[in-house]
View 1 (cartoon, rainbow, N blue to C red):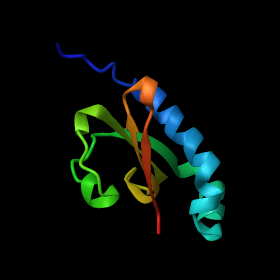
View 2 (tube, rainbow, N blue to C red):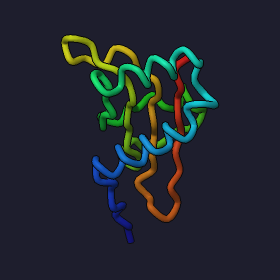
View 3 (cartoon, rainbow, N blue to C red):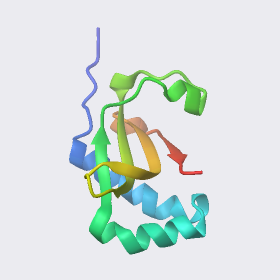
Length: 107
């Protein structure tokens, strides 16, 4: 018997990642990055749902199933509309009853 995972809607994943970002950014980003983000987010800010990478094991030390997680990036885009300044990358479990997440913060 297999249980299908009800995947997070991209908009819900974006909202969840952004809420976590706002809550944790002060503890995990340099003050200069927080100031830059706050000053530039209205014009250049993006919270983007991306294809879940398969290299998270290298980042978090745990092998994950990319199909079981959503990946969301928070950052700023350049004039070519490319995200060139990533403040945080989120890996969020699709399982609502066990909502696990991991964050890679800008260093």
